[in-house]
Length: 121
Image (cartoon, rainbow, N blue to C red; front, side, top):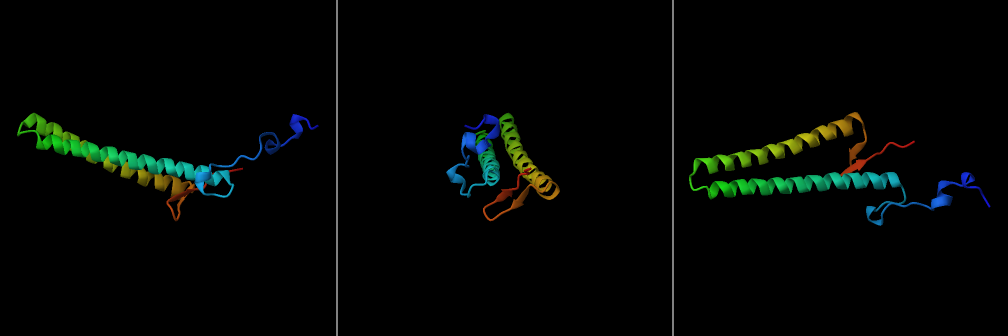
């Protein structure tokens, strides 16, 4: 019988594999990179949908304002804020691509989107 200190991690816990939906062989770094890329893509899609809904509510407020200056101003502010939000998301994506891709080198464009290259020892 081996002592606990003499055993490897795989002997103690077994082989740890990434989730089956990641479509990778058995490298956890690739799986974790795909997981991060999926999270970022999901965030961008959800943020875009929320901004579109906010923009449409601003347009609906403008249409139903009936010519009242206060309601038109509120609708204009809502539309302006939605457009500013869209611009901010694109600016953040550009800065992220420059910082993580060109400067740090942890992402690169792949065939299905971004490929994250996580540092390992």
